[in-house]
Image 1 (cartoon, rainbow, N blue to C red):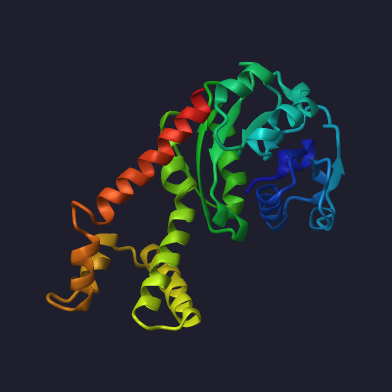
Image 2: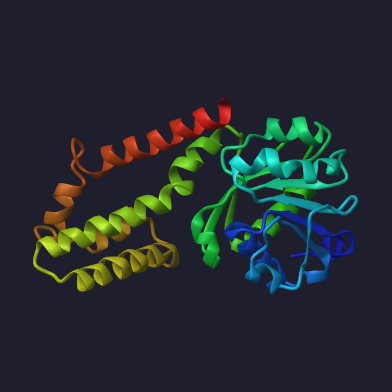
Length: 271
């Protein structure tokens, strides 16, 4: 990551919570000096202070980048501290859920380059996936800079339009919770077949984690991976016959699940 301009002009992080701290840790590990960062947080944690960055309540003049990492319900209280950074000299990047570009354009001005991004919770361990979209004022350099900063917590994909953000929310934004519940359900199913809870939980957790890692590492289509472990007439096939049922199996259930989350995202972000 080219940090030269950011190191010279500085980076402001609004919000030092879990997501903000995860990104900050990635930037520092990638070579950004702590002296280049100012975090605006009214109640900084000991972990945040231990990073060595400056923590304050006001923003410096014309930093290279402003990262907004506060919860949507805290927006009205937090944004006044950085509203002076509009005008086009500072790239604004938001990782706040459900907050559309138009809201930031009203606050910072339509001439300000703004990137809206949606990371997910595995970002806390550097294993997240973030979708991003820029407004019309973003140059290719702005988008590349935003992507480089967001890569501190995992992979990054660029969207074609902001409307896609609701679907992203339904798939990857909310998706970790679906997987956690799948682990819960798989654990309960193992217990129903006679396994002790601790053993069933370990089998379920490591199986899901391992299958996900294999899907990423193998280079194969996941449908082919499924076929590779499914012997005709065997035990896996018997289980998949239930799970893949097009009427009451996982496919229609997942369609309804993602649709419900995406619809709620539309309600929240489009008013």
